[in-house]
Image (spheres, one colour):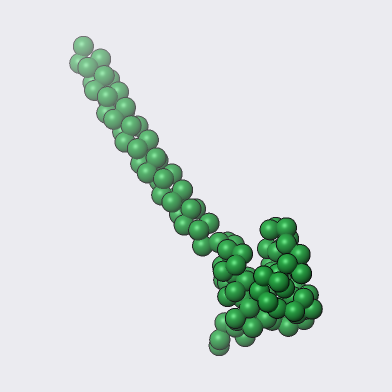
Length: 120
């Protein structure tokens, strides 16, 4: 089954509207920016019907949002967000590895001290 058949027009419309409003753009601004009649923008945002792929691609490019997000296939508005989160996760893992090494060294040092005390 084609993923486009599963698209929730209501969610798509909400995400279009949410993105537009987060950028402090009006429907008229979007209409002008993308050369689309304002009533079409309103219809898309209400979820009456899905916009054509050409509109989604132009909207995504103009407003720096992923088409996957608009279509409800991702919960992240921008691909950069995903990359940033992955990089942050990697940094945390690296930091935890470093902390683990410090703990292991500390434990080894303590073991040596305990052994010395036992031997005395």
